[in-house]
Image (cartoon, rainbow, N blue to C red; front, side, top):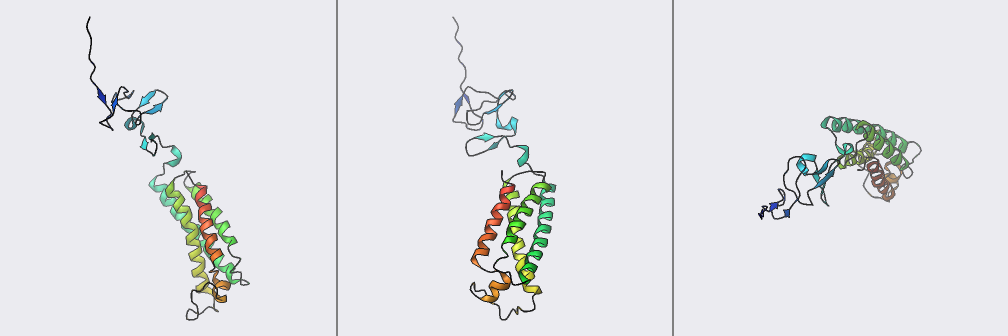
Length: 196
């Protein structure tokens, strides 16, 4: 009677982890943390293109893969939305002194920013696109503030100080805590449209 002694295998990614599992494609030994289930058997992360996550390896979906060209198109479109939306928002503040109630523009800009970023990137979703959509809302708020300062003849820079209770800053610039809160909320709304 002849007995064979098999050599002990260790995972290629975790050399201290003993295993009996091999990749069905390249036959490299792998542990349970590295194994990715596929329709043709267990495969190693190298053969599946898997990415290390918090709970192990996973294969990124097509929806999270964005090319450099898509990023550039998305940033350009977001800048256009932010500038046009910011000008409209700033002009609205000047008409009738709607500084306190101009926060409704944040929701419109956040919806448009999120939708444009989603559509231009072919419905891709990842964290970078979330930042781009959020930045569009914040940039629109800055453009609105600069537009209001630059267009209004009543606002003299020497008389304007950043004080949240001052009627001039509230009436024309919308510099209030609620408006700041709504800008942050709008940025979160825009980011949710392209969330992974």
